[in-house]
Image (cartoon, rainbow, N blue to C red; front, side):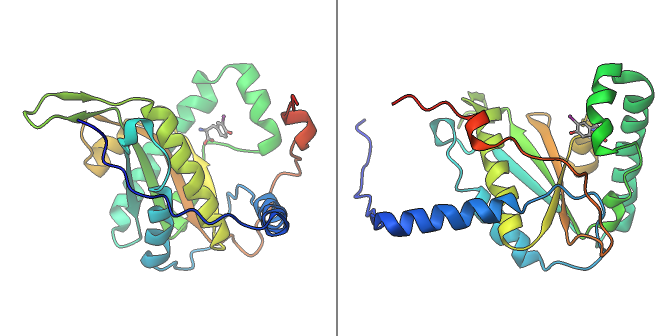
Length: 223
Ligand code: IYR
């Protein structure tokens, strides 16, 4: 069957405007910091939903859109407690036993530990899942292509959208994350990708004094 096509309707920007936009965006992006101290202040659901809509525009393998987001507000404090307890149990194992010394040394500049109060405090947690495979019309397994890469792209857009909307995020990766399936009722066909913590930074939030590689160290131009 031939693909169904329609006109793109692309508007080309004047070059000066492209440059101005790119400069402004790079400056805004540079202001994003991973935050670990959150304020309890509420964030309306509609703001989260709008950023999730942006995330859902990510390119994906064969346009399969193999992502699922579970947004957890504060209506169910018992669920928050269960999530925190499960994450901290894994983290305690990680910091005390599982992490090789070299990994702990790599994390030292960030000052992280097994305590995850932000899982209680932040107004929203967004659990991101990879749909490792889909389901065919007759109930069979539908292979997904580049599922992990696709979800990484969507998560990048989500983080950027949340930042651009004036919110702070923490990309949290308790490992292993299987408890997210059971606590959030997601099927075995979905693999937890990460847990995004979202809200406003605490008034006294501090961040590690670290730098980013300049563009000429992360890029090779061949021209
Ligand atoms: N998941 C642990 C450890 C951790 C790992 C990496 I890689 C980080 O960049 C930060 C933390 C934790 O959340 O503390």
